[in-house]
Picture (tube, rainbow, N blue to C red):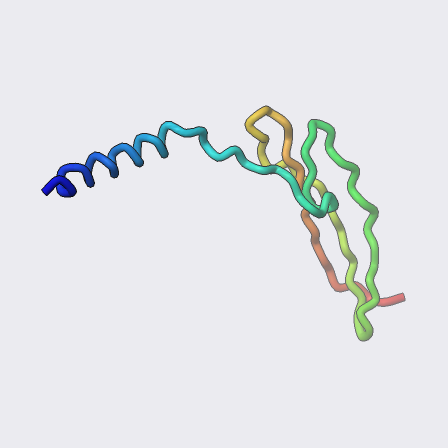
Length: 89
């Protein structure tokens, strides 16, 4: 009978302890800084390049775009890539 009364108290205590703890802070880092950066200065866009894929070529255009801010107010920059088929020279 004791377990019947203590189990709800233990569950309530666990919920209170979990909710009272610090929130999980996000980790804004990447092992590849060529795709994501943090800072207020916009990174420079790389030049367009043409890749020869054998029977056709692809023009690759990369641009940095803002994707929100971190909790401390720094800008999040992510690289977007566009590809277009072009004639090989």
